[in-house]
Length: 187
Image (cartoon, rainbow, N blue to C red; front, side):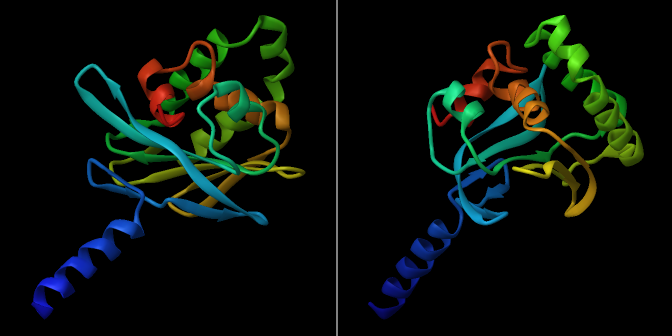
């Protein structure tokens, strides 16, 4: 009887330690960023053809199922990309740029050119991400979007407008993958 109770306790404790396990990627149910605790809003798998590219997790100050609310939420935000398929810097940049162009007018893209050049420079310095790598895009008001690869800061891109544009890759009207948007919104 004691062994059964011990087993049940271990299962329950391990279940609470991670809110979600997707294809072997364990996602924390909350993270501490800046001066706030963020909660896992939702997560999903980015696919291309038959390949699983990455697990994307969205962390916000308050959960929401509405993309506009997530995009406009004040405060810290995090997108964590747990890489499942090796990608070159050019592949990442092409995908990001393609979706950003789809979600913005030419004048908006022109206004973002300095930040997009910084993003390009950061990704070129990284060169590639491999299966098992983690790319984190943290937004800190007053600082900007900090880009980490495997826990190492690779660069910071200033501006709330840039972070808003970046989040539209997953949460915009024309997201990279519509069902991934729904999953990141917890739907």
